[in-house]
Length: 132
Image (cartoon, rainbow, N blue to C red; front, side, top):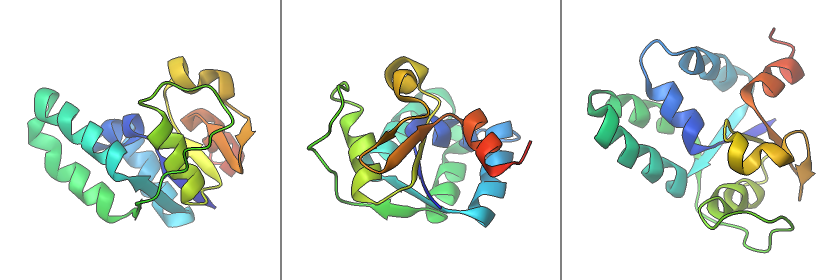
């Protein structure tokens, strides 16, 4: 299983003692996790504004992920420009799943597989992995 981590997942996991941090600790043992520079830089900008004291945690998380440099741009879905590098990175990295908490932009696609990548929320992935 290859799971691409969206920026909001990394942001949540960077918060000390967060449930997402605990979840990713389990996920890193069970799957190959991927992300890309677009996601990491978005998280870095937001942490610098909101929680600069946990920037080091982002670096620790990123070290556990494979960074995907390519982005597929021929997407078969309607997404905002800011989300194209996320789904495009997941597709280019041959992820099996895109893990995101972004219901506004990706919610309509939750549970659907797009160009080989299943888009899931954390709850959906927990159920799929039978961790609940």
